[in-house]
Amino acid sequence: MDENEWDKEAWRQEQAELAKQWKQRAAAETAWWKEREAAQLDERLRQFNLMYGGLIGIGIVMMQPFLTAAPEVFDLTAKICVIAFSVAIPILAALVVLNSQEMYRRRVASSAYVQVARQTALGVGFVGVVAGFWHITPIAGVGVLVATVVAVSVQSVGYMRVERDDAGAESE
Image 1 (cartoon, rainbow, N blue to C red):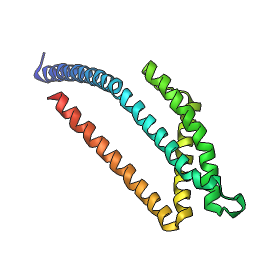
Image 2 (cartoon, helix red, strand yellow):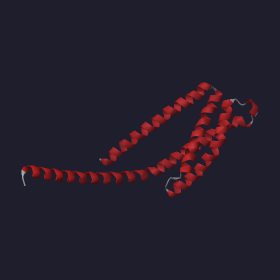
Image 3 (spheres, rainbow, N blue to C red):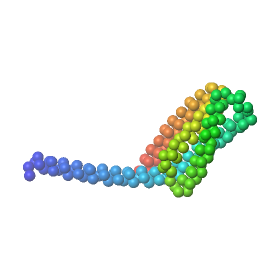
Image 4 (cartoon, helix red, strand yellow):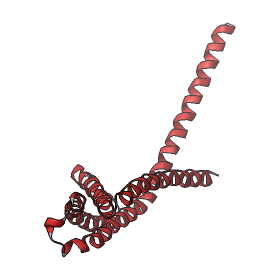
């Protein structure tokens, strides 16, 4: 075996060893993420319940003044608020009940129908909140809109930071 062939064979062996190490590392990382995902399931379900219950509570409070008001005096924002919550509250209530079953079974419903219902209820509930504040004064509606964008950003960045820091602490 000449030197050139020896170098090629050594390189092949080195590459095979590196590939084996990467496969082992990938398998270990996959197992770690699966374990971590299972641990996060309970927290995700608690957060869903918090969002659903919060929007139901906000909707009930915001609807009270409209219950005794004559419908012909509603402006556009009042009508949007009432209609949005009339759609959101029943769906949110159903999602609270479903969430109870999900917590009992320790798994999130994977149905596309449930996912659409979740997004619809949260979106329409948000529209109801913005319209309700807009009805009071437009600047309040804009304030809720802007504050929500900021709040979602804060939650997302904070969540990622906490998870990254936690992952680093677990790997040490």
